[in-house]
Length: 164
Image 1 (cartoon, rainbow, N blue to C red):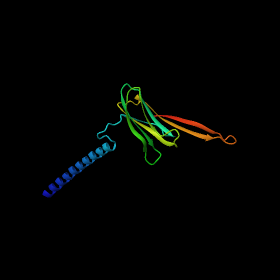
Image 2: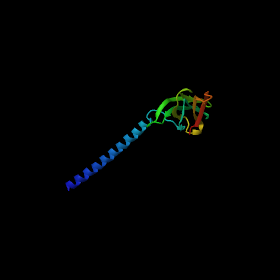
Image 3: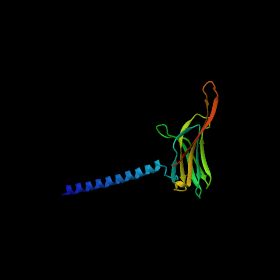
Image 4: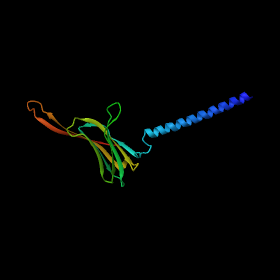
């Protein structure tokens, strides 16, 4: 009878230990997620907006605060053409009063084209409609006309992509 009682106690101890280990594992997993997302000790964006990607010599992320309160807008220009996204410019954090804009630029109009998209992280509102945001891509270049003219024709390309 003692052996049966000891075996039952040992089984009960194993179950309790397994439950504690599972609880500790869950706590550690939750802590890892919080650390990975940056939630430990830093303010998180209330909403995040993205543009599509485009190519240009100059890439400009522009956001306008159309709310009635000051918002913090953090902007980044990201290259998503590789195996993992690479930040090309930013993050730039700007406290933006109502009616004002925040912007982040990369490159010059005559630079070789780079490809990127904008990420706008907005704090101070959960309403995506409180911000209007775009990526403006510009490129100044030339084209040589065919013979007999052979004239050099300069032109300027602009694209505007809305953030959602």
